[in-house]
Length: 220
Image: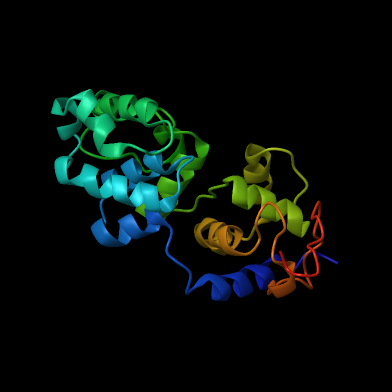
């Protein structure tokens, strides 16, 4: 019998609707600006949402348009975005963005292939920008999506890239835009890497719990 992924994602979408909105989606709602979505996505890598949100708030006071990144000193950029993960590397990426974007005059590119030419942008970032900033079909696979899709038994892969490629072939297109936001929120709150909350999981009956270590009876 085929895995009921549509039913699972519909249930998860309802489950997470009252959870805190992921920071990149929040930036989209607040600004509707592809540049700021791109910047927030770069900063969010290996960083908690609360830290990213605070850094974006400071950064966006100084950076209104892409050219502002040319004139702002590197040291000031570092201070603005600290303590996001790898803030020194990310400061360099931001400084390089104006020159890198010269090949796309007047706009942030809206395709994964073009975004991959930008500093600090890998497949996860590119897919997330395409999906969130432009609402175009893309599948953003981070550690949560990779882990949970394997845990459910929907895919059997070893890397996020493999998971993305399989999902592009297997996942119904109507779920592409929502899968990252939904599954990431679920992974942060319930389906955690270690000792997930299977006892209150809304999709427990569908999940194959691949690689899951049983939780203790006290729920911890």
